[in-house]
Image: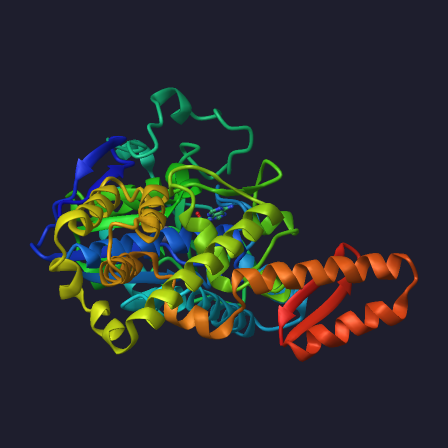
Length: 478
Ligand code: AMP
Ligand code: ZN
């Protein structure tokens, strides 16, 4: 199975060839832990999980490294503003370490509930300061840096291919092209590798370095840690599209300046989740978290399903109708799979083995191959999902064939059909529950509180908890 990916570097679909046959080095930029991840961030991690699962499905052994940014990410990508973790600590009256720990835990709990596979290596920026210092020294020794105002800057004019990833043209790289420019910078795109106390007097996370006591710029951590764990050249690097023009562009410049060779072969970027036409972002304050969806009675996997419905390179519109439709569709799938399992009894277990899919013949083998070719074409997940639904509807297929195909596809979808069936309600039950909630709302409007309470009690007996909020009644399993 040859996978093809749309490589941001070069903007074209390319066949994937790993550096070492059978193995893949994958680096995914992780969270900045100063707040909860919102579902936009989580969309990017679901995309990266699908990528990893697709690579594993295609038979590769994947070394997946993810960083945790707990220092150095400023409120402004152009090196202005203040460290995000420090700011959050000040606002919440907690230490920077408590903030980082709290939001790191919350993040890993989120990705666990979304059935995202844990990276092979998770590395915190604050545990790798020495690696960053050594990398900056290499960049310095090769003449790509200058000191100004106490900080170490990377000089982009020295790096011939600067901006190739983002297709930045020379015009955009002229000094003064941006309105606000750090006066220490020789070129507006120059960026900080190491800050000293000169810049922020009150920074609590600081370390000694050859340039003075201070802390690293945001970009250097990803170069230092990825090279440490994956080598100086590796296969795939990913993140959200917002990382293309600054973060990833700078990561490439400093890594390749240090080693003198190409760093990463394939760059994949996930598009944004948008709500009411706007990118969801932590800095805008108002955002949706996975827990808030769960509080409204949705399962984390409903959100995972919603992500599968859009191609990773297209924006995903989010709203109550999207998550509602995802829940109903996922429930229907779970019910269909449960029915197949019940029909097949003890034989069902065997079908989850990989060999069961490989042994398929005829129409079933065609479905399997269609699914694989959709997956191999730049992870065409909406088509893959259509294949899943198609298999369940195809009456030519036996129950065994259908279940073998569904379980094989679920290696990539990660919808955990078994787990979800055990914890939730069927599509019919959900429709009934929602009907009763509407009836109760009408009863309350008509001031028939006895009837409204009766409905609430009946639902409680069935394991449904109601919560009345200004925007309506929400429910969740008890
Ligand atoms: P952060 O924790 O802010 O460093 O972001 C974590 C990841 O989420 C990065 O890969 C971002 O590119 C990505 N991201 C940020 N906002 C969105 C969004 N609205 N939709 C999808 N991905 C996003
Ligand atoms: Zn990064």
